[in-house]
Every structure is written in structure tokens, then in C-alpha cells.
Length: 241
Image (cartoon, rainbow, N blue to C red; front, side):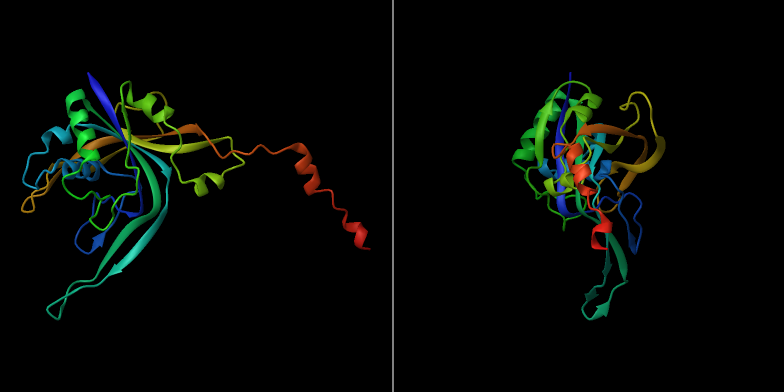
């Protein structure tokens, strides 16, 4: 039997690199599998040299509840008075994502316990990005797609209020191949499957991901009353003549 762990990934800054090299440290617009696996491994207290084969085998989906803004950090550093190479590091500011993690019951139960009592500090992609609370939303049974479509919109209230005239909102979903039923907007590959976090030989494999959209109710929706519309256009400009 399988179970689904649901995490709310929110923070002032987070960064999910999948193709960062040398002085360019970019971020994907959604949480990567390597980043989520790293978070879970830290919660369980696994060292970089420990096996992560079981975690890499988990099925992953991410829902973008609040996209946030792309933030560029022009990074400088010195060591012993010697200047180091300049780098550009990119972050997502004020983003809110929901990660859905599916695996065998016993593994998900162990991860649930670890998230509640993490052994190592947790971060969203980089050590400088600790998560906001609550991180853990719930664990549940059922299909991944039902979890994705049934969990309420997790964006911050101020963000939800920006769309108060919309009864429903359309959210982007990025998932492992085979999770999204029906119409898929796009499919691509990404090199974010962690094979080893060991400092001397970090390795990442490739996976196929599907992208689609899901419509969810907006809890901050305010219906527009027809009388309010007419009141807004009742002014007669000829009155000033």
C-alpha cells in the first residue's frame, strides 16, 4: 500500500537548482526532486555519503500555489584577502508551493515522523532558505491526482485577495510522468533525480515530467453585486458643465 506526504514549501526565499554550474546558480520555477529528497534526507539525519536510493524512488509532484518573484543576488566573496569568482545566484521570493510525495506506507510514516522531529536543519534548496511553518500539512491515502485537486489553495491570504473577483484560480502542476490524468499541457525532461549527494561525486539522473493546470476554489472570492457595477458608472460628466 502507498501513502502520500504533503508539504507546504513557503519561505521569504527559496531556490531549486537543476542545472546550476560554476558562477551561474539558477533556480527552477518549482521545487525539484533533488531539493525535496534533500529536505527529507536532512529530516532523517542522513549524511551526504549515506544511500538515498529509497528516497530517489519516491514519486513527486509540485503544485505552484503562489509563484513568487525571481530575485537575483550578485554574490561576491573573499578568502584571506584573495577575491573569489563573482557569481549570480537566483532565488524565488515569497513563493508558496505544495509538494506531494508518494511511497510505501512504512517509508512515508518514517518521513512524517522525521519532518515533525528533524535531525538536521531543514532548508528549501539552499541552507540560507529555512522553511516557514507549517511545513507539514498531512499524510493521506488515495491517488496523487486526488490529493493535488482536493487540497485547498495554500497561497498567502494577501495573494488570494489579489484574485478576489475570481471564484476559482488556475494553478500549475509539475509531476512525475504518469501522475496527471487526461490532458497534459507539456512534457519535458529534467536532470534532478539525486543518485548521490556525496561531496566528491554528486550525481543526478534524468526524469520525465508532465505539466498541467488545476482549478481550485478561491476562499477570498467576493461576488460582484450588479448594483455595485451600476454605482460605479452612475456619475454624469455633464453635471460639471
